[in-house]
Length: 151
Image (cartoon, rainbow, N blue to C red; front, side, top):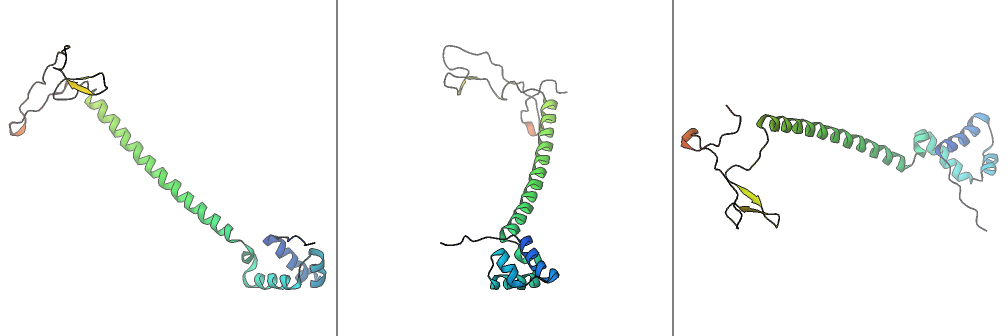
């Protein structure tokens, strides 16, 4: 029957190596206690001396750190976009309040038809009373519509 493989965390690996180095426990005793092959222990020891506990850290831990950094950057960018959007909307509302409500489109009367579209005021039996906007001489002789309440 095959023995199931045990995976050790970096902290457990460092603890096993520490027992040998500081407590003076024999490598064979540690291998028997933890069910390790001596070559596995010596590989861990070599990696420990080359890079310490960081040598045992998994690639996924580094990837998680990278993903956390990218999420933080994305949240900061989203926050900046929300701030800009709020400023634009505030300016839009201020302009709407300044200009007043637009009751009709400029230039003519239009009424909603049965199909949801718009149709001219002379279509059909029902005629809608419509007045053209009062012409105002503007620059270069063009007509400029006058807004209600404008000076």
